[in-house]
Image (cartoon, rainbow, N blue to C red; front, side):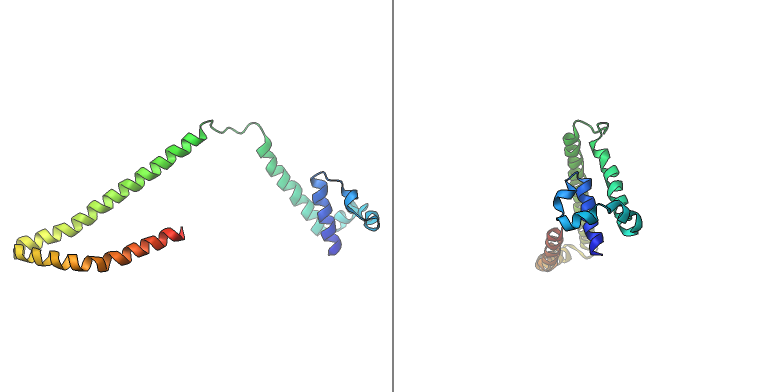
Length: 148
């Protein structure tokens, strides 16, 4: 297995056009002359060489000149970020209006049914208990932001 590791290192050096023979001590150079013979007989080294050249072919596309990328890519990214922020803002406004209406409508209904005095008692109840609800919600939201 040690020989396979050495051969795979030599394949990497050969792939990057480095001088393979200069890296080897004299005793190993004689064995390295038969690298191709070893690769043909060793399926692990053959697979390693095939993967190395397949990765090279896949990366060659990055060097081609025919990549059609828009010239104003930075502007497109900025526009996408603005759209994302606008959608988030619209969702927050909708959530606020929905929450406000879901809180106000029951109070108005109870106030009309039981009288204005019950509305005053309910407001006092809500004002004293709102921190008990909001503080855990805010802490939970901050924890989620930190995790991102």
